[in-house]
Image (tube, rainbow over all chains, first blue to last red; front, side):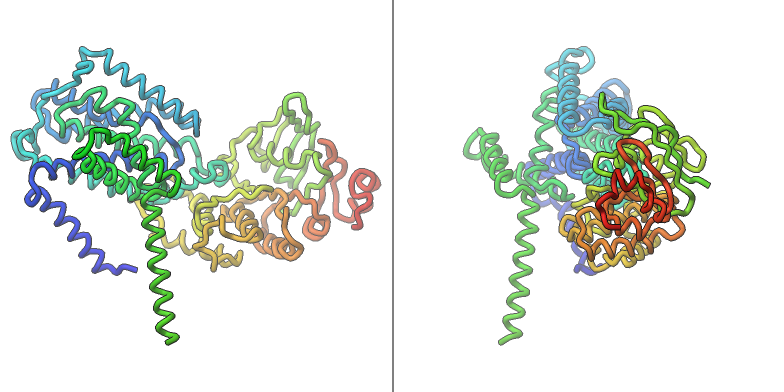
Length: 328
Length: 248
């Protein structure tokens, strides 16, 4: 297929484009790319559960929100805290939440898993509203300091924020991709297909699920933490609510369940629709809903499935043409 | 020496009693067949031995060690493998990946998140070797859902054997196979299980008398007879209960 040199050149071009975006396109589009990257990592983390392990969660936003709240609270209350430790605290709180929940949730699957997460997600949402002394209730936590790594503050330099965010998020995406290629990634898809047989082959199913669950929560925590820093605001509705749980689910569905890059494609479609529709009408949800229905009915493997189908068709066409030429 | 023994094994599904005191004895290195009419409790016996169910009462001993109620993954790790009557493979994965999962388990590679599996040379080699032995090398990149029935059955059996167990229980491996496929499967099992203890459940009497060193006849949750194939063939009880009108 692709040889090493072309692959390296393609990577270089990709990295160059990412580096040049803030220089070429201005603040508005730079910020759009950051949101896109955050949501992509969030969707990828959900796809670790949904696409690769076959577990649908209606409450993935709780890890996203814990990441955000953890970072925001740490920066607000601990003076002089660096940026990376603050992100670390956010991620750690998401991981701790996952570790507390996993003994229970890894023993269920299917509808029970989904509904349990709906319940826990809503519980966290209500807690964030009720514990307003800590969380700021409906207003959330805003205006906390955002220290830079090399500079004083990232608040007024979207360019520096862009680089910080993109480095971390790309690293996360790469790690998640790498996991799918490891032996553990194989066990993961095996569990999705046939958990019973995985057990009979000598793997511990609940424990394996717990590891994936915690990793997935960790990456959702990273995304949530950076999202909070990016907006300089963490709120119950913005980071923890049910809407935030559905954003990655819809993205994964539209992009293509089970393929690694599907969720990223889904987020891209999501963002593009948002961007284009908002110019004409406020009701973006209506359009997204229609797209989702069309995707569900006519292309169950999402846009990624469509791309693969087109690839196959084009290849077949080329082969057919080559044979025609041979004959004549 | 008995590698597997059940002592007074009982199993009920609610009020329905399926096993009433089964004392199965399997010797090390033999091929042992469990036969009996439908509903005799053969599969239930397998399921209580291999951890699908915990028996209501009684004991299961493996090499003298009490393994009653062990979960499947624990049994797999001490050397007991099994295949299923209803094919239970990873249908969306390629044949290669199916066998590789078994090989990874055999090599004890479970929670490795730091190396790419396709760069693990030994695992790839062992998987390819296994695929060659079961004549599925050409189909390595075919999803199992697209394999023919005979091939997916062969994969089912070899997944149980690829983990290299000391004892393997095969639940009706020839179920639904044509005459030729059955013939190939018997040859495959002979080849792959050399030196291993094999317990099979089987309906096809040709297969049983061809493959088994000893036979246990199960009848309504109890053992009717155990012995060498010719003893079983001539046993009056067995003839009355089961073999009766079968030409064997």
